[in-house]
Length: 130
Image 1 (cartoon, rainbow, N blue to C red):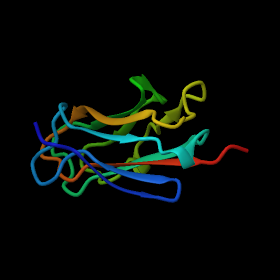
Image 2: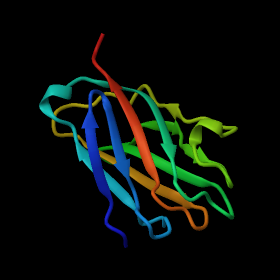
Image 3: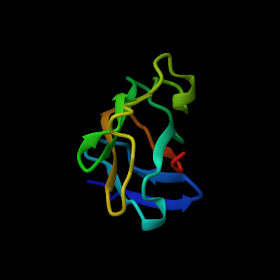
Image 4: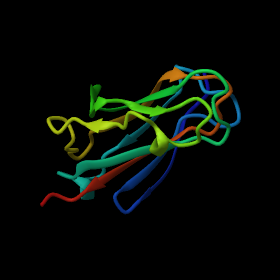
């Protein structure tokens, strides 16, 4: 299993890298914990990118809070594409599970690895409460 890395927390956006130069697998995950200054923030957007695209099959990615999915439709990067932004089916945020509280575990994971995918990174965006 490749150890996943959380790269940075900048503003309300996270950068959660699931793998590096080795091919993505369904075992790859990345974790972050909600800091105190993000208490009550909501997931308002999410996208993903890869460096080496899948040569066979789509990449499907999950985003969870304390083990519960934050998405009602998971993130997809289609075969041959480098970003989820071009996917036919876009991720849908589950508004019943999109608020983070201090100390919540945020997990990015892979549920469909495609083939040969490297440097897969999920970018969840959180916004302050209104």
